[in-house]
Image (cartoon, rainbow, N blue to C red; front, side, top):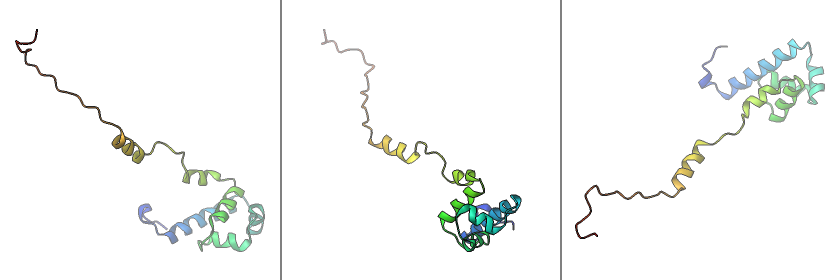
Length: 112
């Protein structure tokens, strides 16, 4: 199933995640019953996840942890860095210093 990554629907993402979970389960030589036990979820919940039929985030995290692939979840939550929006707000709120233009004219004759 080749789909433009920018335009996947929610259903396509569910299917893709389910396919990846199923592939990892099979690669680890686990049946659904054993993986469900390791993840502490029901076989039905695991089956729904693998078929892309909707799952709770709790189920996804539990199964991914049981497969020892927490890197998938960590990729969803990168470390917080400085927000560009916060930088713009700070720039707008900071007081602006006025710089007076210096005259290049010589001093008037009346100045001692």
